[in-house]
Image 1 (cartoon, rainbow, N blue to C red):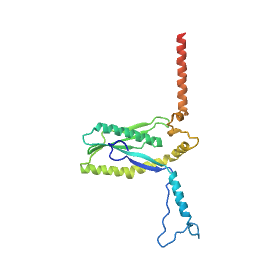
Image 2: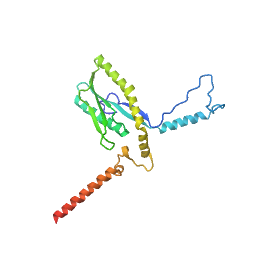
Image 3: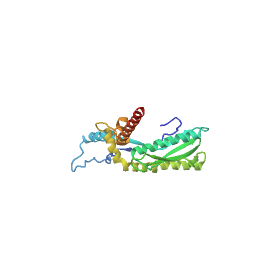
Image 4: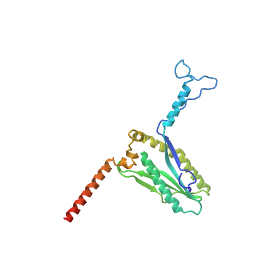
Length: 237
């Protein structure tokens, strides 16, 4: 949830790191449930054990929330520019979040509304190489808009929201499945012993100091400092 200006929370998609837990179908009434083992009825002790196993699996699963649609709202007479600027910040955060997961070239949407009128902004991230910085592209001019006091516009807005829920959210889950193995590997490193963050999770300074790029830059800075000190010493002589 963002500022109080937002009427609705951002639309999100949840994907578990572990496989979803499936439950067995109940036996029809009048028939006794049979075990999958031939000739042996189901042991009554298996039910609590199965429930405990399912609970353990659920506790181990970690839901990940993807922000797919941000909604920024101000009352009638509010500043349209302020709403648009906040929507741009939201889009930047959403694209950066997907990049941390490993998802690129996938749009994030923002609905900026003042009163009954709203505009749709979108952004996506690209990288020219695996080691390059994230380039965020944003479509924030000549945006499609809606006036919900008009029935046709209200209908179009409803269709768009349905597409977000039924189409784009499923595509996002499919994109996550593509990068899921690498994400789980990095996450396992994060949760392992000794605890040391690396790659996408390296936000602590002590972890970043161990990266090759940091070591290289730190060496260059020290060499430049030594070179500058030598120049000063020669000047004093």
